[in-house]
Length: 269
Ligand SMILES: *[C@@H]1O[C@H](CO)[C@@H](O)[C@H](O)[C@H]1NC(C)=O
Image (cartoon, rainbow, N blue to C red; front, side, top):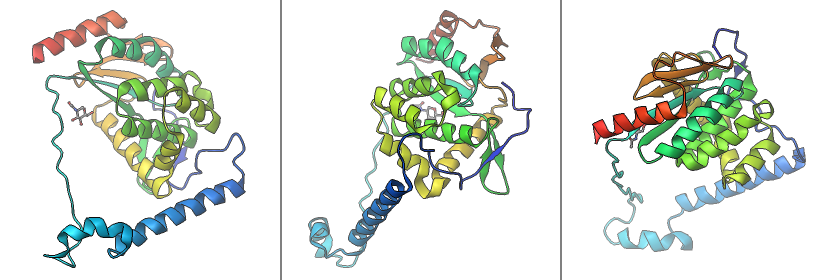
């Protein structure tokens, strides 16, 4: 699926995950009120070091630096996994080629090579300069679907979880981003729907839109325009377009890609 058609525009001000079942304006207001209260309590504790709940952590530093701000930055060394082979799929959430590509190639390959690849799911779209948004080929609904899938990737980095979730949505891509579908798929893959919703709506949607903008920039920097494009080791490996595999000189079967990954993995190790 190419990028050539005119793109409807999605921007950070777009609606939240659209209600399908029973999200009345009243319940929405209640949720907003809850967030305001939680936010207030959080800020309150941040600004009141003498509050009982805060005093335990503040105590240790109180003798030397009574007014020093609490800065405990823990440097955690990432466990560097050497020799993982970069594998990437570039998709649009509401594209039928993405469904074939994930179902017939990416997921079965990942099942066989999980411990050898560093998998990234990226999105195709155009950043819009006037509103810091992104134009998605299938409209604002697709942009929101992409953001939800990026949120799942960032909240649950294990590909077994988020790729399963993305496949579940993609099987029913016409209904992305309906709330009922997202809830069902989240439940099926042990993803917390509230966390997902929080991520997608954080900062009035600007947070998710920022992730989507970086993702589509990454895609265009790689010279990728078609959903679905599979890249192996930073090079285009195969493209699924209009229901067919194209540009797959090394073969489009699961076995072909598994062999290509194993070769690269053993060369790196
Ligand atoms: C995996 O790939 C991403 C880019 O998609 C990169 O930022 C990250 O450092 C890589 N991680 C490992 C462990 O190689």
